[in-house]
Length: 155
Image (cartoon, rainbow, N blue to C red; front, top):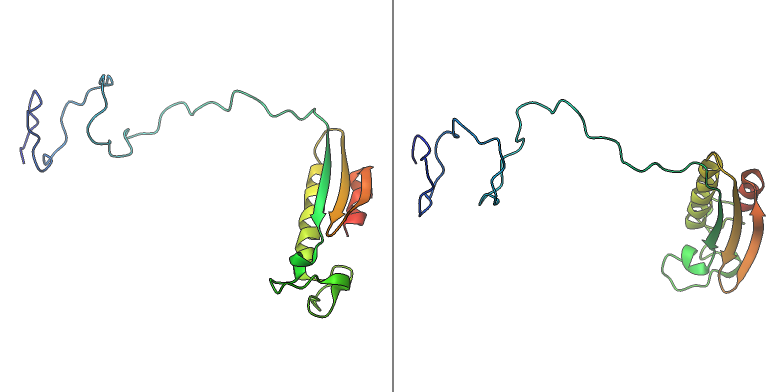
């Protein structure tokens, strides 16, 4: 390795880097990329100004309607055993949840849906929610309604 950098590039690169970095780094970018990436960080101190916020703002004034389509089919509760889990039979029933919830996976679906409606309900805009459940057939549980009317039907 050389102890100091050369003034001009050599035609054949050395097999190992120099012991010390150049004493006079360039401040203007080179017209082409270097052969190897820089070590990070490339500056010793943080920049004075942070980057600006995104140039576009999220709108808090747009209303929305959200329909939750909840999978209530047997495959949600059957743990892969192929059962249809009709009427929440003993194969599929989790004793830790109510009979109308049937299993922990359905409880998770209900919890997530309730959380989603509850949090979006705080969004400062006109909004409505509806709920559809599907298994073999789809069923409208609740048409477009407020947060307060939707949360109880999710269960």
